[in-house]
Image (spheres, rainbow, N blue to C red):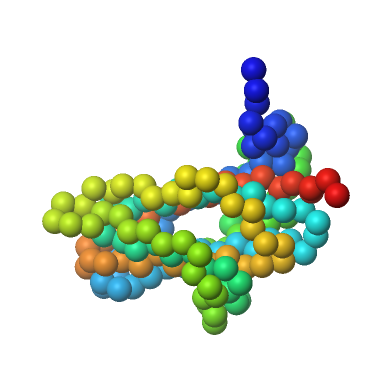
Amino acid sequence: MAVDYAHHEMHAGSFYFIKTWLLNNGASATYDYFAFTTPDTEQEAHARVTLSSDADTTFQIFEAGTITGGTPVAGINANRNSTNTANLAAVAAPTVSTEGSRIWAARTGGGRDPSGVSPSFGYEIIAKRNTTYVFKLTKNTSADTVIDIDFFWYEHTPRG
């Protein structure tokens, strides 16, 4: 039986996740930010994300953004027996001075009857080292909106 590498990293204690949600009860075209910054080390963050909303929402991910502040959101080690902590730093509601270059976009819950489809990276990306990634979550409706965030990654030092 083959064990995929992400599962191997879980056993090694270097697989982390953030599971949370945002509530946006503002007007149409209001948005929320979530961001993470990869460490300036040899480690690489191999990341995946699933975002879902109960109303019409646009999701965008930008690379090489500039942020300040925000509320730190700790990554939880998926191996609950491990004492390792994540090197990747995530924040909710940062102040964004530069979004960066858009690398991914999706829309969900559109149409007359929003369905809450969950767009996701159906694949793993290897984030650049020492780089900030900005998630922009924009409401396309005046309805109160709950956005579910399922972000997970493992931290790996490649053999050189």
